[in-house]
Image (tube, rainbow, N blue to C red; front, side, top):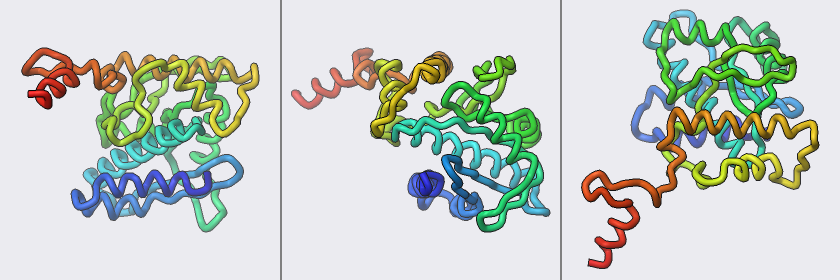
Length: 238
């Protein structure tokens, strides 16, 4: 857990290696701090940040946060995360600031494994960056307090499937259960709701981005109109 945030950043750097030097510079500005079972990830605007710079930073931070959430789910440590916005202070192992407290409180109230944006973050992000369902979806995220509010939830299914060793197609109930059970963890009856809510969230992502949940064996070749795997076998046999 202590290296999970840095691991997500390293994964991102490998994906963009040689493609964008500016992104590789910015990713190093995302700082991570681990305490207890919590990972704090911060990314600040410079004082002279331009509109384009702010847009790029939001795009990058949402991408890395979603990538981190997906990697943790695949690893068997499904997390509850919150992206907030405001003034904060971090130095070495010390930190302070309202957005950090707001993010922690909301994360503790979430009753599913997902990363959401609170209202402050969503409002600020939309000032500079117009994201779509590939980055985040509006979702009525279940809360332990039963407070009903639609929040933007990051889409952990939006990445190219070849980036991950564990695809999302197949039995979603089993996949979520295996993630919660991994590393010899037990699922207490009090956590059944969180497990089921996480499954329902993934089903909603499947509704919005169905291609990301498609079994490669079911994909249709646009030229032949046949399943891609069948067209591939025919090509090899001929």
